[in-house]
Image 1 (tube, rainbow over the protein chains, first blue to last red):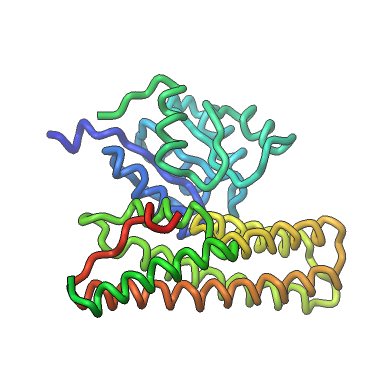
Image 2: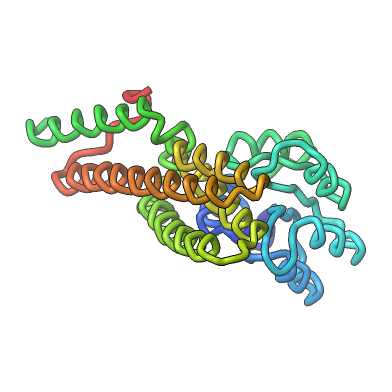
Length: 127
Length: 156
């Protein structure tokens, strides 16, 4: 019962170090996490009927990058919050990433404080 | 408090402080340590091990890519980007800085510059690897002797 109520988050990042850190940061905030290694895998999960409250999307990944994956998810009608997490500073690439359909974008490394501030900004209150 | 454990704890505090003072680690490493708890008791060792595995793979890929007659700078940049991301995630400040310089050389398509940057990144990587191994070994010795790891506030 409790598990069904948990805030679900999909972590999309090709870096194993980042995936592991994001998982612990999110679980500490009471979220249930799933992780995939590129944008195509994220799109496939939604195509197969999986749903998530939030997607943490990296920008630069092999197979399908975060911008393309975000565009595809929005085109599919996915309404989940999508937060970009990138090591790129503000600039045209980040602008294009946001323009693809992000709700927000934060700079790596993601910390508990950054995540909490971003979710607060988006009006999300977990637990 | 047992004298041996106390000595190890003092040693750990000093050693950790030296890594911050030398710019080898930054605040992000403290963030990692703060995420380690009873539900993730080996979190830091796990993440640092992933970083070591990934870095060796990326350094090998970089050496191979830069050894080609026609260097694919896009591919080199992608590898450096990944190394920059994982080093920033664990707080390996000097590796991260060396990656930033490396990416500039990639943008300029400067093979000689890239080779020098690869040398620098490799040097910084093995430095932080060596230091982290010593740090984590000290922590294990303290825990094995029944002590606790001193909190971060004692360091910075």
